[in-house]
Image (cartoon, rainbow, N blue to C red; front, top):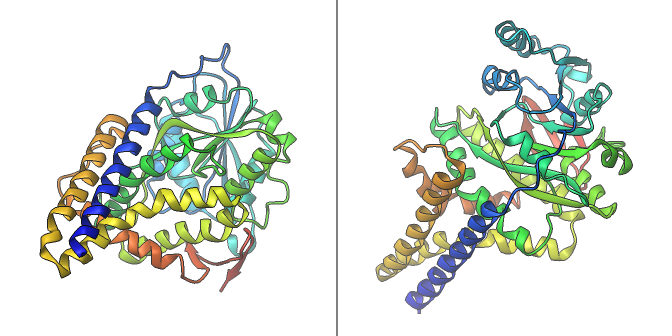
Amino acid sequence: MLITLALIISAFYIFDHAWKVAAIAHFFRRPAPPVPQPWPSLSLVQPITASPNDLEAVFTLRAQKPYPGNLEQVLVFDATDSDSQAIFQKVQEKFPAWQPTIVLTDAPGGVALKTVKQLAGLEQATGEIICFIDDDILLRPETLPTLVRHLEAGIGATFGLACYTNWRTVWGGLMSAFVNANALLNYIPPTYLADPYTITGHLYALRRADFDAIGGLAGMEQRLDDDHELARRVTKAGLRNRQTPALYDVDNDLPTLSAFLAQMKRWFVFPREMMLPGAPLPAQALTFAASLPNLLPGFILLIALLERSAAPALAACLLAFYAAYIWNTHAYLQRPTPPWGWALLLLVALVLPFQILFLLFSNNTILWRGQKIHVRRGGEYDRLP
């Protein structure tokens, strides 16, 4: 009985990976929208919050004009964050032609949350396109042009796909292995079944006219879910959120196990409390249906521990997992995995899905950039001592 169950689960898992890889291949083969003539002006609004990541690398890429049209960059710092400001000044000395607008914010405790910084940056932004970007995003040359090209008629917001590149520590590497193994599989195939009901908050773009018409970020000062709420406003206005093939790198520094666990918890408390409650029931069902197959190799491992003859079914699942990872990273993400990183993928396939399942039942207290925050259902929050 256990062997039969293991074989059925294995067959379903392989089928699930096969159709998802096929969808990804089709997605990246789609013809790109035409190049705008001329390129619209773009305002890149960048909240900076005491980043533990490699800000110098981030700023260096920002300084190299990552957009073919008129680009206006707005950097928003906490007034007390002298370290980040010093890194900016160091990079600007190397690239004196880079002259972004600098905005300083004051907030209780010296740290303003992202939405507050975004609102402060918007007051200085004048571009036809508004693009928000996090402070750990390393732009590729084609990233911003791809986002803008996909802002066609009827499209309210465009967003891209993350590739994690930090392999300097075991925990940074585990996060990179986790994201790179799952991002394309979890984000792209569901778009063939329904339009995205949310957007990825790392980096997203909207036309300024549409942004203002749907209310922008008005009323979000006390919310953590700027991306989810904005996506809801886009949909409510009769526009669509579009997943694009715009790839960008994320250098996420996680030096310790506690840092890794804190980030994983934040990632899954946020959607549980802020994204899914406001989503239609079919969209919630699609989200779970796309994610639940990730648990299957772990279940087969449990069966194999009880019944050794189930080992071939486990091996078949792991072969499908590694094959999809190799194909997606080589063909699309195009960033290398160090030799020692391949062992971490076993944890991604067999252990982390159960950690995520556990996190779905954890409390609502998260840690972010040295701040302790209680997330309220619906998007608001309380700062804790």
